[in-house]
Image 1 (cartoon, rainbow, N blue to C red):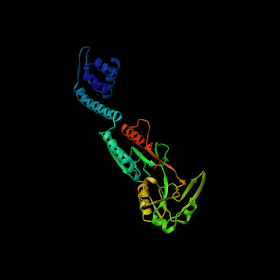
Image 2: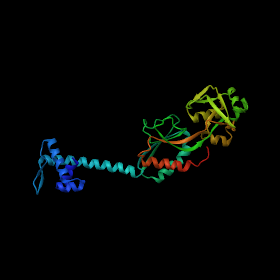
Image 3: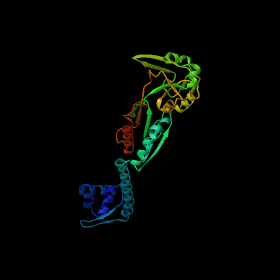
Image 4: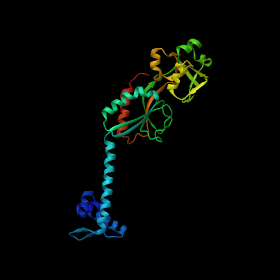
Length: 291
Protein backbone atom coordinates (compact mmCIF):
# COMPACT_ATOMS: atom_id res chain seq x y z
CA UNK A 1 0.00 0.00 0.00
CA UNK A 2 2.91 2.36 0.75
CA UNK A 3 4.59 1.45 -2.53
CA UNK A 4 1.34 1.98 -4.45
CA UNK A 5 0.87 5.41 -2.84
CA UNK A 6 4.41 6.40 -3.82
CA UNK A 7 3.87 5.23 -7.41
CA UNK A 8 0.83 7.48 -7.69
CA UNK A 9 2.58 10.45 -6.09
CA UNK A 10 5.70 10.13 -8.27
CA UNK A 11 3.70 9.41 -11.45
CA UNK A 12 5.82 6.42 -12.43
CA UNK A 13 7.24 3.15 -11.25
CA UNK A 14 10.78 4.44 -11.73
CA UNK A 15 10.13 7.57 -9.65
CA UNK A 16 8.66 5.51 -6.81
CA UNK A 17 11.62 3.12 -6.98
CA UNK A 18 14.10 6.00 -6.59
CA UNK A 19 12.16 7.48 -3.66
CA UNK A 20 11.90 4.15 -1.87
CA UNK A 21 15.39 2.90 -2.65
CA UNK A 22 14.06 -0.11 -4.53
CA UNK A 23 14.48 -1.45 -8.06
CA UNK A 24 11.84 -0.68 -10.65
CA UNK A 25 11.09 -4.39 -11.06
CA UNK A 26 10.54 -4.78 -7.31
CA UNK A 27 8.05 -1.90 -7.34
CA UNK A 28 6.27 -3.39 -10.36
CA UNK A 29 5.98 -6.79 -8.67
CA UNK A 30 4.50 -5.25 -5.53
CA UNK A 31 1.86 -3.32 -7.47
CA UNK A 32 0.97 -6.45 -9.44
CA UNK A 33 0.70 -8.46 -6.22
CA UNK A 34 -1.57 -5.81 -4.72
CA UNK A 35 -3.85 -5.91 -7.79
CA UNK A 36 -3.96 -9.71 -7.60
CA UNK A 37 -4.85 -9.57 -3.90
CA UNK A 38 -7.68 -7.07 -4.52
CA UNK A 39 -8.73 -8.71 -7.80
CA UNK A 40 -9.01 -5.27 -9.46
CA UNK A 41 -6.82 -3.22 -11.74
CA UNK A 42 -5.49 -0.14 -10.00
CA UNK A 43 -3.34 1.31 -12.78
CA UNK A 44 -3.56 1.36 -16.57
CA UNK A 45 0.05 1.37 -17.75
CA UNK A 46 1.80 1.62 -21.07
CA UNK A 47 5.49 2.13 -21.75
CA UNK A 48 4.91 5.91 -21.72
CA UNK A 49 1.95 6.69 -19.51
CA UNK A 50 0.20 5.58 -16.35
CA UNK A 51 -3.33 6.43 -15.18
CA UNK A 52 -5.36 5.45 -12.15
CA UNK A 53 -8.47 3.41 -12.67
CA UNK A 54 -11.63 4.34 -10.80
CA UNK A 55 -10.83 1.61 -8.25
CA UNK A 56 -7.23 2.82 -8.08
CA UNK A 57 -8.37 6.40 -7.38
CA UNK A 58 -10.52 5.30 -4.44
CA UNK A 59 -7.87 2.96 -3.12
CA UNK A 60 -5.11 5.58 -3.36
CA UNK A 61 -6.87 8.02 -1.03
CA UNK A 62 -7.10 5.34 1.67
CA UNK A 63 -3.46 4.40 1.14
CA UNK A 64 -2.38 8.06 1.30
CA UNK A 65 -4.18 8.56 4.63
CA UNK A 66 -2.57 5.41 6.01
CA UNK A 67 0.90 6.57 4.94
CA UNK A 68 0.32 10.03 6.42
CA UNK A 69 -0.78 8.56 9.76
CA UNK A 70 2.16 6.15 9.80
CA UNK A 71 4.61 8.97 9.11
CA UNK A 72 2.98 11.13 11.82
CA UNK A 73 3.31 8.25 14.30
CA UNK A 74 6.95 7.81 13.30
CA UNK A 75 7.66 11.53 13.80
CA UNK A 76 5.92 11.55 17.18
CA UNK A 77 7.91 8.58 18.47
CA UNK A 78 11.19 9.96 17.14
CA UNK A 79 10.44 13.25 18.87
CA UNK A 80 10.05 11.38 22.15
CA UNK A 81 13.42 9.75 21.54
CA UNK A 82 15.16 13.01 20.62
CA UNK A 83 13.77 15.46 23.22
CA UNK A 84 12.35 15.24 26.74
CA UNK A 85 8.63 15.60 26.03
CA UNK A 86 5.35 14.23 27.33
CA UNK A 87 4.29 13.46 30.91
CA UNK A 88 6.72 12.00 33.45
CA UNK A 89 4.89 9.89 36.04
CA UNK A 90 6.89 9.48 39.23
CA UNK A 91 6.35 7.93 42.63
CA UNK A 92 8.25 8.57 45.83
CA UNK A 93 8.03 8.12 49.60
CA UNK A 94 5.90 10.62 51.46
CA UNK A 95 8.89 12.36 52.99
CA UNK A 96 10.49 12.50 49.53
CA UNK A 97 8.88 15.85 48.81
CA UNK A 98 11.58 17.54 50.89
CA UNK A 99 14.28 16.25 48.54
CA UNK A 100 12.40 15.87 45.28
CA UNK A 101 10.24 18.97 44.89
CA UNK A 102 13.19 21.41 44.58
CA UNK A 103 14.61 19.13 41.86
CA UNK A 104 11.24 18.85 40.11
CA UNK A 105 11.22 22.64 39.97
CA UNK A 106 14.66 22.59 38.30
CA UNK A 107 13.50 19.87 35.89
CA UNK A 108 10.41 21.79 34.82
CA UNK A 109 12.54 24.87 34.24
CA UNK A 110 14.95 22.96 32.01
CA UNK A 111 12.43 20.99 29.97
CA UNK A 112 9.46 23.11 28.96
CA UNK A 113 7.76 20.31 26.96
CA UNK A 114 7.46 17.91 29.89
CA UNK A 115 4.73 17.69 32.51
CA UNK A 116 5.42 15.96 35.83
CA UNK A 117 2.80 13.86 37.63
CA UNK A 118 4.31 12.83 40.97
CA UNK A 119 2.70 10.76 43.71
CA UNK A 120 4.06 10.55 47.25
CA UNK A 121 3.09 7.46 49.25
CA UNK A 122 4.90 4.93 51.41
CA UNK A 123 3.29 1.75 50.08
CA UNK A 124 5.05 -0.48 47.54
CA UNK A 125 4.28 0.81 44.04
CA UNK A 126 4.37 -1.59 41.07
CA UNK A 127 5.84 0.76 38.47
CA UNK A 128 4.91 -1.31 35.42
CA UNK A 129 1.41 -2.36 36.50
CA UNK A 130 0.50 1.16 37.65
CA UNK A 131 2.02 2.99 34.69
CA UNK A 132 4.86 4.88 36.38
CA UNK A 133 7.99 5.90 34.49
CA UNK A 134 10.19 6.31 37.55
CA UNK A 135 10.18 5.65 41.27
CA UNK A 136 12.33 6.92 44.13
CA UNK A 137 12.58 4.42 46.97
CA UNK A 138 14.32 3.84 50.26
CA UNK A 139 16.01 0.45 49.96
CA UNK A 140 17.07 -1.63 46.98
CA UNK A 141 14.10 -2.96 44.97
CA UNK A 142 13.30 -6.62 45.52
CA UNK A 143 12.16 -6.95 41.89
CA UNK A 144 15.32 -7.88 39.94
CA UNK A 145 13.69 -6.91 36.63
CA UNK A 146 13.87 -3.22 37.60
CA UNK A 147 16.88 -0.99 37.04
CA UNK A 148 18.08 0.80 40.19
CA UNK A 149 20.45 3.80 40.41
CA UNK A 150 21.81 4.50 43.87
CA UNK A 151 21.29 8.12 44.89
CA UNK A 152 22.35 8.64 48.50
CA UNK A 153 22.69 6.88 51.86
CA UNK A 154 19.76 7.10 54.26
CA UNK A 155 20.51 6.80 57.97
CA UNK A 156 18.01 5.02 60.16
CA UNK A 157 17.54 6.43 63.67
CA UNK A 158 15.88 5.21 66.84
CA UNK A 159 14.11 8.10 68.51
CA UNK A 160 11.31 9.13 70.84
CA UNK A 161 9.88 12.28 72.35
CA UNK A 162 11.60 13.85 75.37
CA UNK A 163 8.38 13.28 77.36
CA UNK A 164 8.38 9.55 76.61
CA UNK A 165 12.04 9.19 77.60
CA UNK A 166 11.51 11.18 80.79
CA UNK A 167 8.63 8.93 81.78
CA UNK A 168 10.04 5.54 80.69
CA UNK A 169 13.78 6.07 80.71
CA UNK A 170 16.36 6.16 77.92
CA UNK A 171 17.58 2.84 76.46
CA UNK A 172 21.37 2.62 76.65
CA UNK A 173 21.88 -0.68 74.82
CA UNK A 174 19.68 -2.44 72.23
CA UNK A 175 18.56 -5.08 74.76
CA UNK A 176 16.83 -2.30 76.74
CA UNK A 177 14.28 -1.93 73.93
CA UNK A 178 12.51 -5.11 75.02
CA UNK A 179 11.00 -3.24 77.97
CA UNK A 180 9.83 -0.23 75.92
CA UNK A 181 6.77 0.50 73.80
CA UNK A 182 7.75 0.22 70.14
CA UNK A 183 5.88 1.87 67.30
CA UNK A 184 5.75 -0.77 64.58
CA UNK A 185 6.17 0.38 60.98
CA UNK A 186 4.37 -2.37 59.07
CA UNK A 187 5.97 -1.64 55.67
CA UNK A 188 9.38 -2.82 56.88
CA UNK A 189 10.41 -6.37 55.93
CA UNK A 190 10.89 -7.27 59.61
CA UNK A 191 8.96 -4.59 61.51
CA UNK A 192 9.57 -6.10 64.95
CA UNK A 193 13.12 -7.50 64.62
CA UNK A 194 16.32 -5.48 64.15
CA UNK A 195 20.06 -6.02 64.22
CA UNK A 196 22.18 -3.33 65.85
CA UNK A 197 25.88 -3.09 65.02
CA UNK A 198 28.70 -1.42 66.93
CA UNK A 199 32.42 -2.07 66.68
CA UNK A 200 31.83 -5.14 64.53
CA UNK A 201 29.53 -6.70 67.12
CA UNK A 202 25.95 -7.51 66.14
CA UNK A 203 22.98 -7.58 68.50
CA UNK A 204 19.60 -8.85 67.35
CA UNK A 205 16.57 -7.49 69.17
CA UNK A 206 12.87 -8.24 69.00
CA UNK A 207 10.61 -5.37 69.98
CA UNK A 208 6.97 -5.17 71.04
CA UNK A 209 4.33 -2.52 70.66
CA UNK A 210 0.61 -1.87 70.77
CA UNK A 211 0.47 0.43 67.75
CA UNK A 212 1.17 -0.62 64.14
CA UNK A 213 0.95 1.85 61.26
CA UNK A 214 1.89 1.81 57.58
CA UNK A 215 3.28 5.30 56.99
CA UNK A 216 6.35 7.26 58.01
CA UNK A 217 4.45 10.47 58.86
CA UNK A 218 2.06 8.50 61.07
CA UNK A 219 5.00 6.93 62.90
CA UNK A 220 6.54 10.39 63.36
CA UNK A 221 3.28 11.81 64.73
CA UNK A 222 2.95 8.91 67.15
CA UNK A 223 6.52 9.50 68.33
CA UNK A 224 5.78 13.20 68.86
CA UNK A 225 2.69 12.23 70.86
CA UNK A 226 4.90 10.25 73.24
CA UNK A 227 3.49 6.84 72.33
CA UNK A 228 6.83 5.08 72.06
CA UNK A 229 10.17 4.55 70.30
CA UNK A 230 10.56 3.80 66.62
CA UNK A 231 13.16 3.13 63.96
CA UNK A 232 12.65 5.58 61.12
CA UNK A 233 14.69 7.07 58.25
CA UNK A 234 16.22 10.30 59.50
CA UNK A 235 14.70 12.04 56.46
CA UNK A 236 11.32 11.81 58.20
CA UNK A 237 12.42 13.39 61.47
CA UNK A 238 15.43 15.61 60.69
CA UNK A 239 13.57 18.81 61.58
CA UNK A 240 12.08 17.36 64.76
CA UNK A 241 15.50 16.11 65.89
CA UNK A 242 17.09 19.50 65.17
CA UNK A 243 14.41 21.30 67.22
CA UNK A 244 14.54 18.85 70.11
CA UNK A 245 10.97 17.69 69.64
CA UNK A 246 12.41 14.18 69.21
CA UNK A 247 15.57 12.71 70.72
CA UNK A 248 17.78 10.11 69.06
CA UNK A 249 18.85 7.19 71.24
CA UNK A 250 21.44 4.44 70.67
CA UNK A 251 23.15 6.85 68.27
CA UNK A 252 26.46 4.97 68.46
CA UNK A 253 24.81 1.88 66.94
CA UNK A 254 24.11 1.31 63.27
CA UNK A 255 20.82 -0.36 62.42
CA UNK A 256 19.29 -1.25 59.08
CA UNK A 257 21.53 1.04 56.96
CA UNK A 258 19.81 1.87 53.69
CA UNK A 259 20.07 3.81 50.44
CA UNK A 260 17.79 6.00 48.36
CA UNK A 261 17.38 4.65 44.83
CA UNK A 262 15.94 5.84 41.53
CA UNK A 263 14.09 2.86 40.03
CA UNK A 264 12.77 2.45 36.49
CA UNK A 265 11.50 -0.48 34.38
CA UNK A 266 14.08 -0.70 31.57
CA UNK A 267 17.56 0.53 30.72
CA UNK A 268 17.27 -0.02 26.94
CA UNK A 269 15.49 2.73 24.95
CA UNK A 270 14.96 4.75 28.12
CA UNK A 271 12.84 7.82 27.24
CA UNK A 272 14.77 11.04 27.47
CA UNK A 273 12.22 12.49 29.90
CA UNK A 274 13.14 9.68 32.31
CA UNK A 275 16.88 9.79 31.65
CA UNK A 276 16.94 13.55 32.22
CA UNK A 277 15.25 13.20 35.62
CA UNK A 278 17.49 10.30 36.69
CA UNK A 279 20.58 12.29 35.70
CA UNK A 280 19.29 15.30 37.66
CA UNK A 281 18.68 13.15 40.75
CA UNK A 282 22.14 11.58 40.57
CA UNK A 283 23.76 14.95 39.90
CA UNK A 284 22.20 16.54 42.99
CA UNK A 285 21.90 13.69 45.47
CA UNK A 286 24.78 11.29 44.86
CA UNK A 287 27.34 13.46 46.68
CA UNK A 288 25.12 14.24 49.66
CA UNK A 289 26.09 12.84 53.04
CA UNK A 290 23.82 10.40 54.81
CA UNK A 291 20.45 12.01 55.63
